[in-house]
Length: 227
Image 1: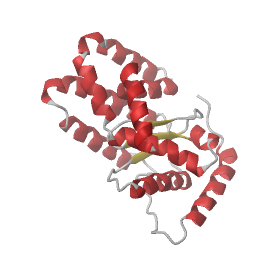
Image 2 (image 1 turned 90 degrees about the horizontal axis):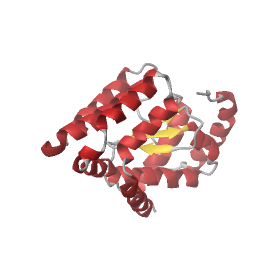
Image 3 (image 1 turned 45 degrees about the vertical axis):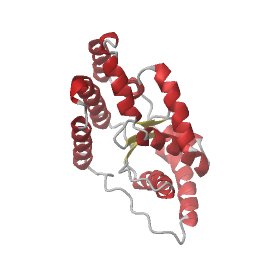
Image 4 (image 1 turned 90 degrees about the vertical axis):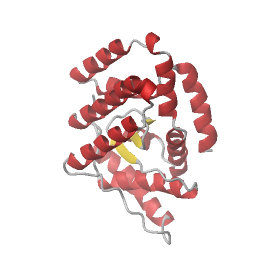
């Protein structure tokens, strides 16, 4: 997978950070997340905690389906972390988190977001449930307007607030005999083993947003709430 040229990215980020500082003048000081680690121990603990919390919320009748999907998500995130596919640069993190927090405050939400900046050049943002979000640097490069980014982030926050992860897992439990869980897990492990990080990210998205018919309805619902 190609690496992002940070030297090329920094002028873009500096300009937007400057705009953010001007826009934020006179507002309550923004305190960035403590999860921008030089080492990954704090982040791993955070991911472990979110995994355990999500598992504890699983309904007894479909606990096995929940456990498989949540473990796939957890292992996929850890593999992306070990593969150095996340960018831990405070300036980027502060800029992205500030937009998230502005949306959260404006809508009086109470999520505790964990925002990971993906190194991928693909313009994409993912809501993986339980307050976990991946924002690719490719999206930050593509959208030069802060309001455009805010719209995308609001959409992903809506997925989280509407608990679409749990709706998907409930649907998956209802159709578990048609899902081919073992084959799905085999394909994901194969992608991880071969270092195909874009494919791993795609598998993570499939874990969360599985069946297309339900996905379309959830996208419309997220758009409506995001607006």
